[in-house]
Image (cartoon, rainbow, N blue to C red; front, side, top):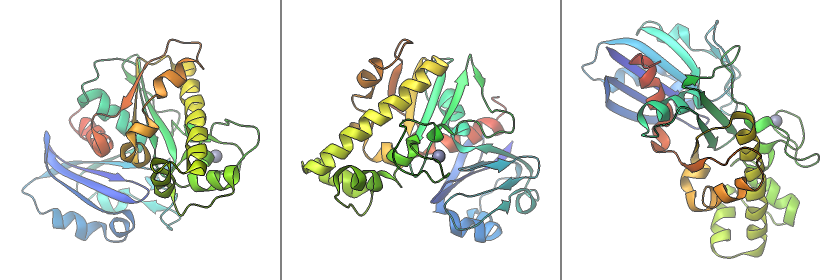
Length: 284
Ligand SMILES: [Zn+2]
């Protein structure tokens, strides 16, 4: 069955067209994609008769109406069914939920209790528990970045204080560094670069980041008792040695439940896209 999979991220959109497997995968900026959906799909120009369209979005969705509220793109809301239903039957899913499904079906993990955590512009999670995908009441499961980790701290994008992603997401790490050390860094990459050079304020920031991440992961372990946690998202994929290295040991001392394996996700930045392929291939 021919399919079109669309992973609309906070910055970039990945499109995958195929039948069973992907024939072509392409990356465009999310802003560009949402502004010119038709022409970008037509440019894929492959000999595939599309019957199903699966879309993953990084942000809240109203599945019944097919409306998506993009958090960082400068567009308040967009109806995804209207422009896409001409190509086939459309399903919409949260991006982390799709990612855990992709890893579960195609990531070679061989376990029935799997968590995917993304650390990117925000922090979120997808969960397969007892072999079943967890989606929640209206498909918005997994906003774990908004769990409170500290009583006081930085203001989160949602308005509350002390949330996990208000410290450790790629967007907020420089602000955490500034509050903690007084030093300013242009972006998250600069914090990691300076850390690698041994700069003391960057070292202090990364130490704090590791402690807060460990607490976030420990909370997930106590809640879900997973066999394994896989970590994706640009911050983790660009700095796996710093973000994921040593995390298992740090989490172990904070949990009541037995500590799972924690590793970088096997499918890299295509976990979400493969989850959409799993939906189109009726793996769920
Ligand atoms: Zn929040």
